Length: 171
Image (cartoon, rainbow, N blue to C red):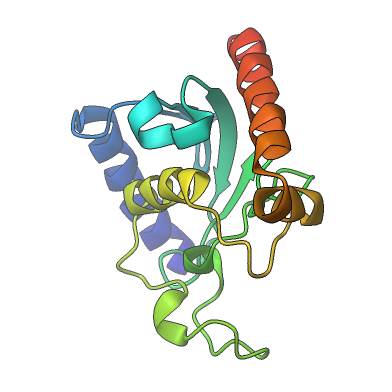
């Protein structure tokens, strides 16, 4: 039962994302016509993307059958070098963490997943995260260290990422 109401909600949210012109630079499609699996292309401009401006990054949003009570997972398919993105491409951002108290006491429950989040708010938060990393507990240790200690080298690696993303965007 939860799965069918989740599918209905996701269908509405997907349709909304297709018609909403207020969010430039985000393109979504369903993977194999499955409303629980979205392919997302983030085409970042210099203003919203910060150092990642000009990049075209492909990612996946995978929604659980318990959605919206539980968060989706987001994974970048296009390689991306960022403190809050694991080398595997998995995104580590508070709003995608389950709605419970953090056993390590790092995040409050209010920072974590809430059913009021939508695919649109998730993607806007991820875009914001790209230009303002949280380096206190990095998912990518090397990126977090460079962000803090060698901003010039960090920028160099990110710019290479952006160039590579432009070349592979439409493969």
